[in-house]
Length: 416
View (cartoon, rainbow, N blue to C red):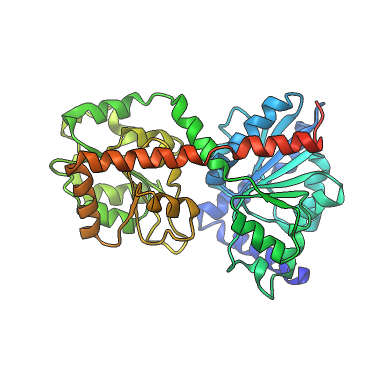
């Protein structure tokens, strides 16, 4: 089975090479990995490394509470963060809490052994998923403590299928698996993986921290204060979401802040076409003379979404019409905002929890979206109940990070 995995990795690398001249993301993936070894060699200074790997930006946010707690508890260790995706790397490279940020090289046995040899970490933490067999094996072979945090397992995953031998094997490379819930523990124990426990989801810790000391967004505040009208903040939207939002009464009585999942010029221009002269991109907001006339603000940068939700009367989370499902609902819920999303949310534990708490609402059509929005805006008591339920749900689920850190301390995996 490892043979077929290696074949897949080889073909994957070849396809990226062929696509690079034509596909910007493939080009960024290839370009970013050309100098990983050289850059890491430059930073081989005194002091042991703690290495955290994240697939992309969302997993990085999920891992930040653990990363920052590790730095606080073991200040003598340096922090390395690796990413698989270019979008994750672009966010991570701006993070001040890491001593080094790099791409994870293509998962061949040679690359993996070289990477782990250069870094020689004292502790390795993988966030949620992104299981790269050879990198995990290389860490395991060197006897380095290897943790998985905030993982969530479902019966349909390959780990639990007859053909999932390679996936099951790599789970045994981990020293310990911290999963989000007891259902995941039960699934893992059913395939003989007993080195696991339910610690919760570190995203709750992260979003709770964001709301405590938010950095100001002066231009957003200025936009929000014009007109004294309710605002819907829509985050991580896709065209299917935007088609529904377009039907809302944004010309009169409701203003929109839209932060699309893709912020390339073509997508921003498509949003301009939807909303016309009443829409402006965030990058142009400071130059706009008639801010009072603007009804729709288009966010054309990464990094501020988690702070945007505070300005909304209600929020909408995109992705619910895609096969992969909705994006992060907790960033909005942490601000105590009612949350709306599309129908594909059932595989997300936190989304199900918010719906059960009557803090979130799923819609499938523009009429359903309008009905939910109108109901929340017209009945302040209903909106207040949903807001309080959202904030309460987040507060009830914090605490995964201190559980993980306490376990590391108890097992003495790191020394100061």
